[in-house]
Image (spheres, rainbow, N blue to C red):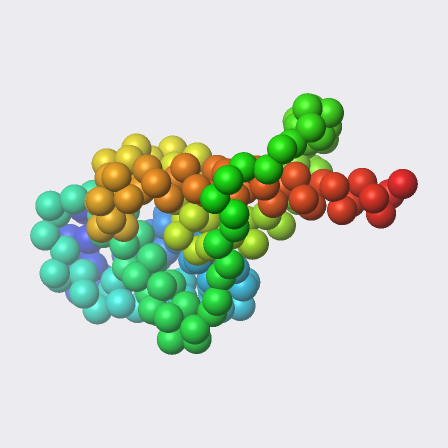
Length: 185
């Protein structure tokens, strides 16, 4: 499907690019949001990524999947934005805190909507790299090798970031839950 659409675009059918946009806009937005953490700027990244893709489509050589090539553009544009605007992200502690079993159990028992809310809030608080890796690995269900192709990072670096991201996400979720529990009671 992508090959046919790309061929049509390269042959001058600019309307065929709408199919690319429709197919990839949601995941691309999700990737941009995981790095930028701002809806407005993520939309800007998405637009610029699609423009770059359209302009550079003739350089796509098919060595990887089109989605891998495109997502790498989105990720690169997102990190350029972060670097340009010098957004600062905090790394959390390296040693895991003691988490009482009842808190872990309570987090697991939250209703689905509450879980989504807490996870979204926690993803906003972790570094862009960690948020991106979690999104690619768990939500898009990419393998380590596929993530390596998309990001250009080494497999060992991805595994380290994934490990830290899991830990930081759990730590943040626990802290958010503790704060909400204090407010409610």
